[in-house]
Length: 500
View 1 (tube, rainbow, N blue to C red):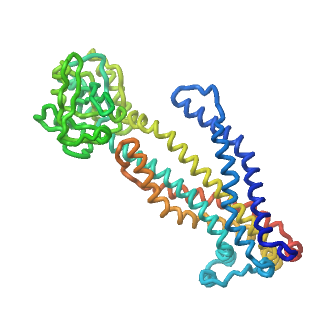
View 2 (view 1 turned 180 degrees about the vertical axis):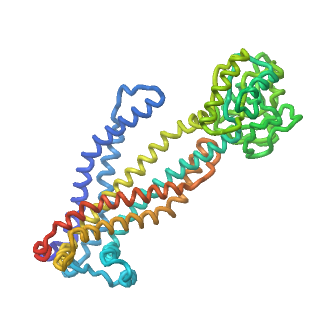
View 3 (view 1 turned 90 degrees about the vertical axis):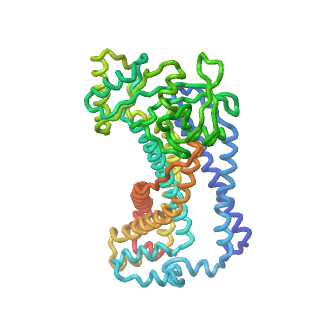
């Protein structure tokens, strides 16, 4: 265009207008697809809570945001390359197009040029990958961001699973049983420990009690446990666990303590039914627990039993088994049912540790699916960018392809060169994604942990997520490079050498 009189401004306007047109066309596709996706996602989320989606209004604000992004994002993305391209002279543009492409002038190019021990097609793939470094950087950046998001999601999930497992290990039991009425502690323990597979049985008390808070009144779940419990061994955040001889002592849930500004040594007031005055409990420690909406606070069994008027009696048993596998836990429940039935004890509900884990993980699945969906979309965008990069490479290297075919290169060898370039870019993007994902994963894990438990998750970086993404990005890169590679194999020697 410059050779026939176009100015820099003409060139910039032509390509920026093209970017806006592409954005408008993308908007026409994105609006209906986004609406359908939102409808399906809303229906799936509501179905999880047993609600049927009846209406689905379109939010005008979402359409406005989409329209603004459809115009501004392509413009911003195109601005730098368009201005850079507009500055190029006609002589340079023509002289750098075609075979060679100016490769080998920089230090990095000369280092790559010294590679000798690899097979010749592989050497060509490595060198050609970095021929257009700006284009390579953009492609790597997109794929690396997708990989970092994927690893972040997998690491947050692994951290959540690990944290929940630690919290449930605090419980230390394999099953919990609720009874229809109060039974004497000694009888429940004796009958429960007579069941096959039972190692330890303890009787606990659960009592929901109102507690004054900074915003009025809220209910906490007082869990009465033996002071020398073999099953309950929570991870103490501050202070200590209950000890023999403790009176009105309480180990509070860390989330409640943080929200209410309660520290070890403070006293809390709790009201009981049929009592006019509140009862004071001294906070001796705090612990982390995800059960019952993080409202559980531990108190001595005998003290709580006296307060509610049922000394030495309870209606909830915690059981630790000899084996801790899911199959053993299910068998334990079946044996306990038969044992209680034989002794005339009416048990209304059984729950295994596996059931508790699934219940805690269930509410987190929605967040993980949404985050994973974002990572997949980013990966798809990266794959499209990879296909675009490889397609441009094929167009720019038609003469090179013709020369290789004229010297005896087979169709498979030419296709392998382009596919190897794409796979190499994918592997490099994974290597760049790992150091990016580690701090992002920890930050996001801490943020979600603070929101759910008022404390960060016990962070675990998902190495399986790295391996899984490596496999995904290799397959994605190979598939994204396959179509351009097939196009390259269709270039005849006559067409390639006549090109330009």
